[in-house]
Image (cartoon, rainbow, N blue to C red; front, side):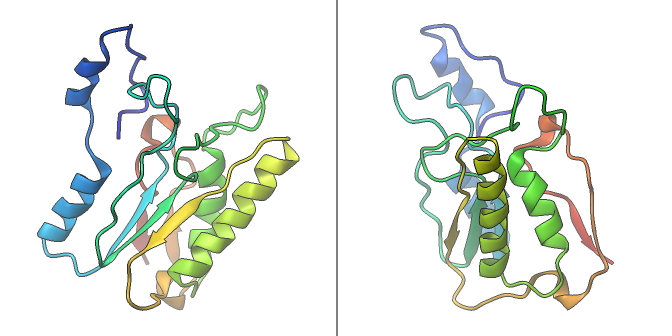
Length: 173
C-alpha cells in the first residue's frame, strides 16, 4: 500500500517508494498479533501501481490469514475508479459511494455487505461505460452481523481522496 498523494517515480527511482509503502499482508498480520480474534479490513487502495512497470495495476494477490475478512475496492490486478467521468465532482471514490450507504444498512452479514457493494459499484461503473467489480476474501469461519442490527451507526459521509487508502471511520452509537 502506498500513500494516495505519492508522486509517480522517474525511471529508476521505483526503489525509493519502498520506504513509503506498507504491505497489506504485513498490516493484517500485525493487527492479528495484537490479539484481534476477527479482523474486518476494507482496502480502497486498488489504483495504478507505480512499482509494477509493465505489470498489472491494482493490488497484488494477498494471502489473507484465517480470522480475516477483506473487502477490496476492485478485483486483483484491476485499478479502481476514483471518478466516473471528468466532470465527476464527488470527493469519494466510486467504491466508497456504495460502501458507506451499505455499511449503514442494519443487520447485514459480511457477505451480504460485500455483495451489496459489488452490485452498487458495478452498476455505477456500467452506467458510465466503465467496469469495476469489488472483490472480497472471507476467512471468517462464521457469518458476522455488522452494524449490530441497529440503524444507529455513525459513518462519516465525506472521505477526502487523500484518505482513500483508509477504511471508512465507523462508530457504534
